[in-house]
Amino acid sequence: MVKNKTTETEVDVFDFIESYVDNDQKKADSYKLIELMSEWSGFGPKMWGPTIIGFGTYHYKYASGHEGDAPLLGFSPRKAQFSLYVYSKTEKSDALLKDLGKFKMGKACIYFKKLADINIPIVEELSLETIAYLEKHHECSCRK
Image (cartoon, rainbow, N blue to C red; front, side, top):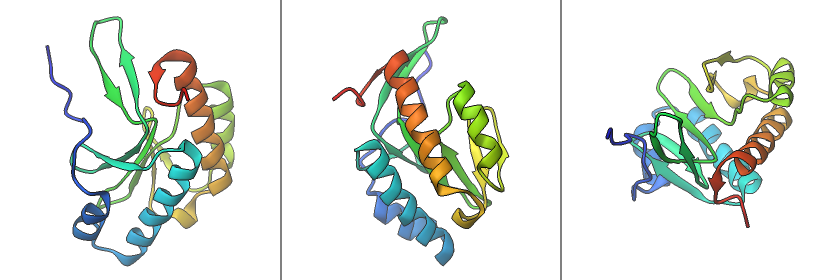
């Protein structure tokens, strides 16, 4: 069985930001995202793999038998742009994207350059929609 690369680690989130992020604006945006995602999820930040900051956890299992754990919400302050992990494929999420702002979309990842480029209330709605989706479809730490 293949081992998941993205697992929770013991690396300190704030040490990671200070050592990895080389741009003051990106550092400020990272700290703001930590504040917001902690509030929205109810969980503090944890490092997942070498560069993802995640909040809470859920367990997934695919029909193929592959399974693992992942953060409910997360982001990565990558060198070129942020990667935002707050999207689930629902009608509501798809409708919200039209008002998100300046971003590019991967399969389930939202890419943006700086926090000022995106609409924070829309990110909050996307985050809450994703948590609701994960709670309904997976075992997750969102069940309190």
